[in-house]
Length: 230
Length: 230
Image (cartoon, rainbow over all chains, first blue to last red; front, top):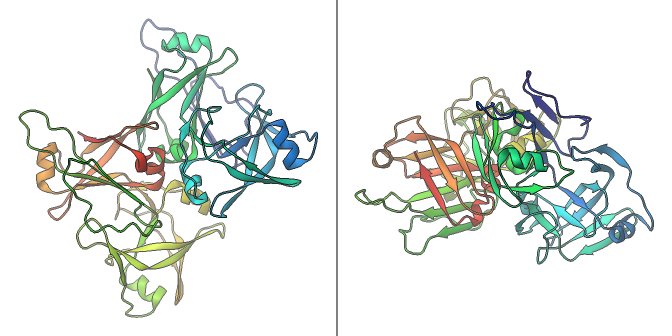
């Protein structure tokens, strides 16, 4: 894990630990240059989410035992979210598996697994690209925990690239819920993500989530220049 | 592996096999719309190169025995190049390894290993992004073959995204050796590669090489729209 901050810009990373390479692994804090006559831009945090899962109460019970409570390994950048100490094993249709799949808390209504395409290929799954929560008709898989195995009928997705923001950020960028923005990343492997979907919530901090394929493709860990554009 | 061709456009894939998922895995044949008054655009083939290595005569001898000759598994899109039946194992600094690393022929003056960042992370290597052949000062690794183990002092890179083309293609796009072009890929994970380096050679067919991270990040295997731009 690496945290990169341009020296003269506001700090924003907060309590992120460097210890767990299985989790959100790279982070860059950048602010855009301020165009004349516009307010100072909000601090932008771009993160790569490694593969992970969210679990329902029922599925956590099945995997870890009735009434089990997740232990916080470390808080995530978005308030109230955390990486749990617990992991599960995901088993795909060709009897291939990925172990140490991190659980992110808190619990949700529906279980969901988020993988990069590289992970999906190694498991033998064809994944659709979906926003978190929109899992109808997506592939399933088996999950294995210390107290049980369960079949997830659906819920394995590649997360669509997206940006979390609060209403003030949305006003700054002049975007609304569901709009598409662009994220330009400079460097030797410079690229522009053309479809970063806007998700506005009053509790959200400005934060782009990429998956590990996307972060590796653009060399996020060594990017010196990054820009969120309408 | 999948080969996608728009129905009314010229065919270009040639003899590429669908059999080997460890090799160049996805291919899309697309032609740009013809602007009025311009000649018909050349056929563009975009391919994802899985991790692979090129070997020198001396290193092939060390790994497979003196005078060993590579066997052709299948020809690659660029004339004279081929995927060999033979593979090696690469061992990184943390005693982690990747087996079945495909050898591409013909032999070269210097051995070189091309990995995606995802591979490099799993091996524990920090890779620079380099054009093929430009390996001075890059990390090394151990290679293991059926007849021996050798230490590659340098030569492990992430290949810079590039486009091979002949002089006629260069004239069409109005680019010269070393210029940077853009590759726009549409779709749910649409993105634009901003630095596709131009490599012109009289024997080359128009052909963009991405690595598996890049191909997976942009969803190349399901892209319906792709465009090479100056």
